[in-house]
Image (cartoon, rainbow, N blue to C red; front, side):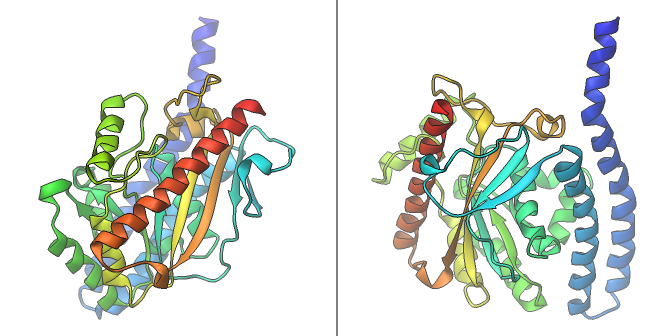
Length: 324
């Protein structure tokens, strides 16, 4: 009985913040819906600033738990090869960001590898430090639109739902992006070009990704999935007139590798909230949008090269972590 009590008490570490975050969601959505109805009588340009402000309030509550309740510490370090970093005071919970995040707010596409649900929180962690949290919008897989409450809301906030492969609609995505341009809303568009999470529990998915690379005559990747170019190409070329840069993000979770070098599943949000996730390393690289080619064939090569760099960075990081 004592053991059962300990287990249930430990689980409260997750249920408490989860209950508070989910409990505030209906009230938030009700307030947002009231503004949405009122905004129908107002010019469209007036809707987005308030919508972004309301989104900032709610996501700030979410980030409060992920940055404070979990005891995580966030540090910025200069860009350097991971294996050459000097040993520093290691905390059990720490997010280390390698690179210089611009202090001013920019119109950007946030490009990242994808392993777990915590990746969404990392995007918020960076955005709030540029006072751009309310501007975060996502390119999401189509199935997520059926999420209760959130699915419809993300679409109204400017999120874009896309289908895979032959069912992907370039016209629908282009129209949604053009609406963003017409509204004058700032751009902070989060894209995970792999299309799905890198999960070692599904080796057939990883094998299919490597087969795709071979078919396209591209190098195989071991620690990330081969990126698909469609959504990225449409986003960059449609928004090019408004974009300042692409933020190329590579995320490494320390707990996602065994001592023998085999990959494990990256931590979930509950594990992160329960303080069971070790250090997270984030590599930040700002790419000027003028450096990105427009033609599909060249952009595909450019995007794959970015993921080749990610693949090598993750490999170097895990080798260093195992030998530390």
